[in-house]
Length: 224
Length: 224
DNA sequence: CCAGACATATCTGTCGACAGTGTACCTAGA
DNA sequence: TCTAGGTACACTGTCGACAGATATGTCTGG
Image (cartoon, rainbow over all chains, first blue to last red; front, side, top):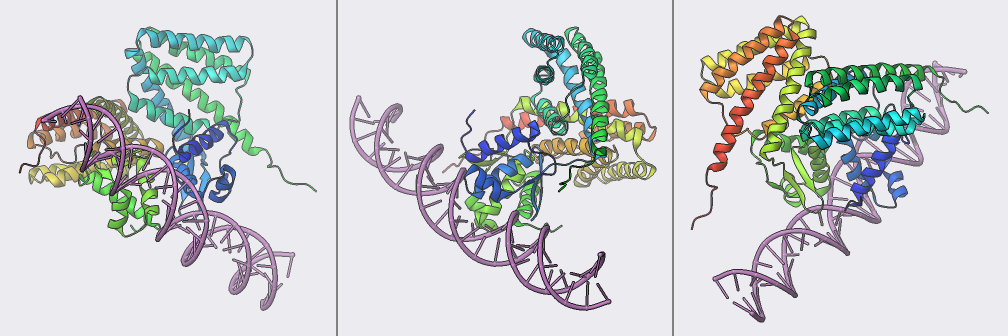
């Protein structure tokens, strides 16, 4: 996936690092340091940062540079609310419009997730989970809606990249997915929408409790 | 509203020109020409263009520069569908959460629109219409949802900036607004959502027919 | 010992310049 | 006259440099 320009490649690299949690919210993105690291001048770095800012993964303050996006609890709740509604919409239109190939693909991805659970492979489950959600966006037959929904999902995923699902949560998540997939395969748009909204809401509660718990830990300090 | 950096000012200026229809879809945005026009170097122009691209008002193709965004009919329909759902959500949450000041503001803006109709002042109506929709986004008490909805609305408005509402459509629009506002003032979330979706859908049909009609006109060609 | 002012250093915003690529025009041949 | 090839131009991507602004660290006074 070699993009043509340097800035595009750099933007992709930084994007992945943020989504993987290698760059954490609040981290400064220094133009000079990045220029040194990628062995280019500041120009392509600036272009890449502006491009990344468009996805809201990083923030820009005039004369203060770029930082990996941070978030307050209120915005996090708002984003999860929006995400639930958007994913619900995708699920609804998916149930009403997906063709047979797309339905089979969704069924298969759900099964792959269950297989990962059986093997207690949490990384594989996270992968299958992500793929399932994406397949639903793709099958809603509305590219604009798909793009918006995916942007919100990415914005959220960068904040819980470092939290692995617990086995208990995964089992619950599987059941919720089951409902969504059943409704989609039955062409039940409203059912799929409601099931997906419930699923996202429960995920939100789970993640938010993790974050609250995490923020109570004392920050690491250098002891002599 | 003087922003601190040159690029921010330039981005705002260009954004307004696109939204007003002074720059039309497909127009090339030449870095050199813009640099000459604003009497700056290409650097702040590049920054401004990248920033504008984040709103999807303009498009960027590597080594081919920036152009004012164009759209095909399928994407237009998708955007209107997404817009209807998003505005419906804003209306729902607005009906459930708006405080008394916000409700009064919405009622007032609706009345201002009706006053504009009585005076046959289409420009004032367009202004009041836009203000009413924005007030509803603001009162949904979810900034993330508001931002997403506004972005979609702006993306759409650049394509019908040059079509003035007909008197007939305006009268119809007023009735649809009445339904939405009534539901909001009654705290009827689902009613407001459905009314708003119907309103956007009818607007979409109206605008799309205008655009189809417009595209059938022969394009102006230089006759010697 | 703490607070505030000053000086230093780093970083961003902006500028001008060069090289490579894409486009358009012009010419030559069928 | 139309097509194909080549050439020239214009534009974007990238680079290095300078000036203004912000943040940091230090010093002095209370």
